[in-house]
Image 1 (cartoon, rainbow, N blue to C red):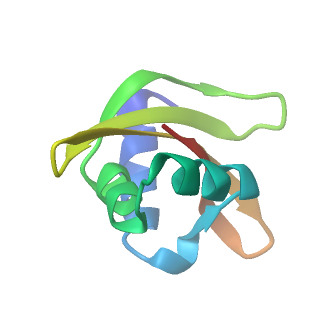
Image 2 (cartoon, rainbow, N blue to C red; image 1 turned 60 degrees about the vertical axis):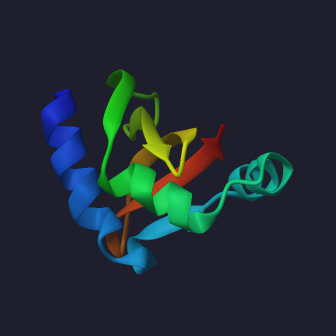
Image 3 (cartoon, rainbow, N blue to C red; image 1 turned 180 degrees about the vertical axis):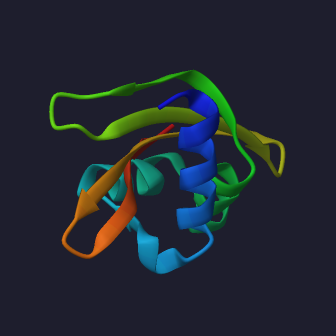
Length: 95
């Protein structure tokens, strides 16, 4: 997959909050850095890729996104994952 395909899939998944799951590390970073869920969803839906997407050893497509929201630059590192219920977006960390 290329960056454009990953973005298309990720944006489609992010339109339904049930398809977005925050890992515990992301939740901790959000509290520490005072980043809100609104900012994370804005980053997922209105994104610019900060680093090229790549496939990891598990076959998940990883990405790092950046977006300016309310004057703050928000970065989201995540992955598109698959399980028995379909595809979903894992938010790994935010900064």
